[in-house]
Length: 233
Image (cartoon, rainbow, N blue to C red; front, side):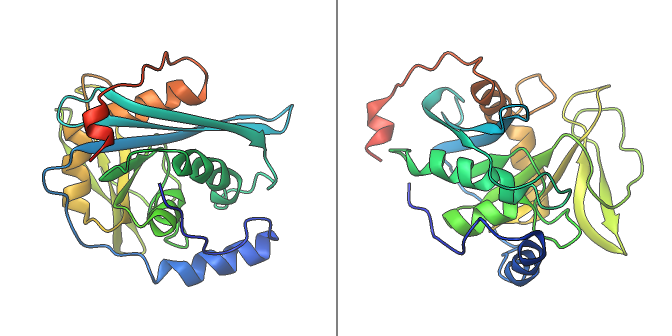
């Protein structure tokens, strides 16, 4: 999978914030996906004591949501832990894993924020610009903004607002469990992002691509490469 080199990753926190502010204007907040064949999830696991991280990408068929390909990359983490700048710790490993893919996903679900970020430039948006693929942020926790309580039923959601701007949705993916935070990453609008997150859920709080990527990053996923017909497409 092709990666667009937008900038260096080993920068100061001040420079990282400048990059986020500049790139935010390039994020496309419109679009939808029609008849996707491949949907990927990405996630990372960091060992703070060893200062290493493992980035994982798992590509699933759609609508079957069966594993087509999975890649993991482990390396040293070169950027400090700074809230709002986690992209600069995580993206290099995730991009390295994506670059190893032999198939190209039509959509990527990211365990992190898209525009639901103080500078409207979270991990999902950054990856979307670097991969030129539609991306959705689907985070387990909220970074900024506020929202009302969504209904208890699956599919209920409430707008996530920051300074009067809708930056995402608190979405109930399973009745009675905590919502996830869905936001535009790149090349998709919010209603479509919410719809695709729900379409990829299979009875768990997290959508299946994200759930399996989390397992892969933690070394808990048995990977079986499959479906060479998809790999050729």
